[in-house]
Image 1 (tube, helix red, strand yellow):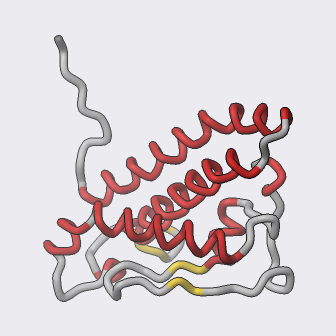
Image 2 (cartoon, one colour):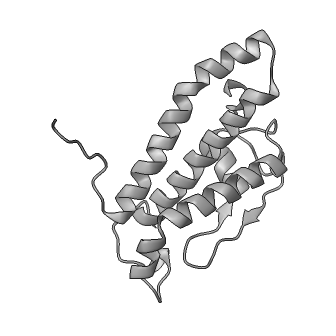
Length: 153
């Protein structure tokens, strides 16, 4: 997805907000485009679909956290702030953004069946794993869980 590495301005692509369930924050398509360097080659429809699936997945994984903090929103749960924003919100966005790009990258594999497309797809496979790992780390951090469990045999 190296072709998807330029910053998008509001004039280039209209923003759309994907609303969440009230506890977790809404996600701006323009914000994810800029944060993850996705340009207009990813249509809003494809991006929207990937963001919705990523939000659903992260929300599911964080359901126990949400249950423990009923009556709040993620923004009102006590947490450190960095740059004026709760680290919980930052980590939620990181998880959603990473899962979104992993999904889009996997979909990209099936869109370009040329030799160069197959080569690029194989080069992107490690990126998909890294994105999914980063999403899992962000979710584990929100839940207050250890990122890695190892067992000696």
